[in-house]
Amino acid sequence: MRRSASAAFACSCPAWASAIDAWIAEQEHQVVKLDVLVTETLSFGFGVLAKFNKGSSLSVERRIVNGDAWAPVKAEGLLSARILLVKGLNKRIVSEYSDFKKYTVNATVTPIAGTP
Image (cartoon, rainbow, N blue to C red):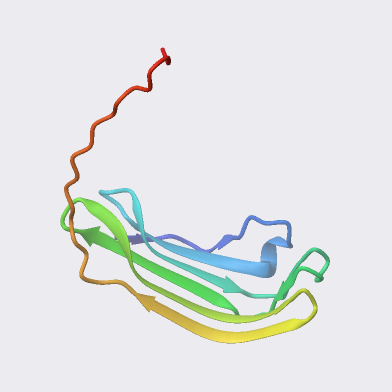
């Protein structure tokens, strides 16, 4: 597994406003872990729509499930924001996923009468 260097987040904000770290599984060419950190306050819609404060972050981890599919196993976010100049948010959210199951489905495609 290889860890990439930090990169500027591509958005309509200054390039220095956030940083991204990505860990890549070299043989599979898949992102294993992604970390995003807001390093300066980000404003959307001149701060009217949303403003994300410095220190907000998001981390997502993925792994191979059942030997054939990549799936998220953990997502964690630290949110400090103001939405529509009214609603203030200060939350830590953690979601963990487990007990993945593989399903087999039999399906048939039936053409609709009158279509080529």
